[in-house]
Length: 101
Image (cartoon, rainbow, N blue to C red; front, side, top):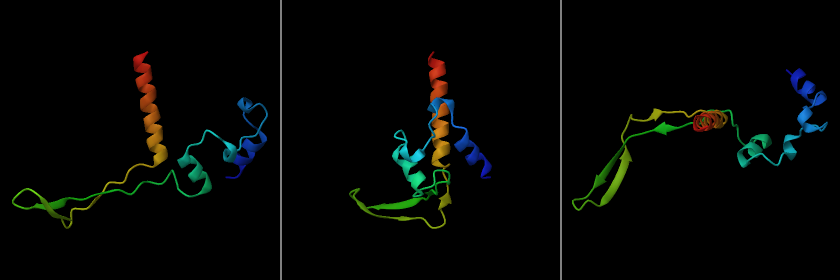
């Protein structure tokens, strides 16, 4: 598994003009990518999300009184990882650009 990173270190991209890429010095990374590099978040982990039905109670005048979750209506709707969402958004953007040309 360590062979590939070692190969990349010894064979830098021709686009880098002989320099070695260092992600910590990359100024084009956004805040989420920087947090991922630090280990604060994981961009490849699914996002936990739940859907739940609520009961809302109003008085005779239509004013809000209270609300509470209906028991046994909670459903897990996990979202794809942020990296996958970015990939899908990029592909959608490319398709739209090709269509406009």
